[in-house]
Length: 117
Image (cartoon, rainbow, N blue to C red; front, side, top):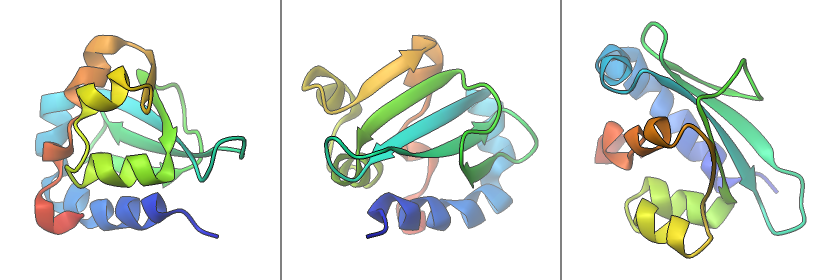
């Protein structure tokens, strides 16, 4: 089974191509997303680079991340589509964050317009 999050990351790519420079200027950080289909499964990692050029999204762990987010696929979809508040997810243990907390706080679903998700 493929992750629902993979579809969302693919939908974000064209947005970065046209509006990425603005996000890079605002955020200036690299993130790793460790997405797990279900508890106990191996995570699939994506790198969201909002530090270089127009930004990029790639599958796999690319370089060193300023912050790493770990969460279940369904929770990631809810987070990206605005159904789940990032602070609530963190407090409920649905979202785990490693690395620079300041950088982590700069990544918000608002970086990507509603139509891109």
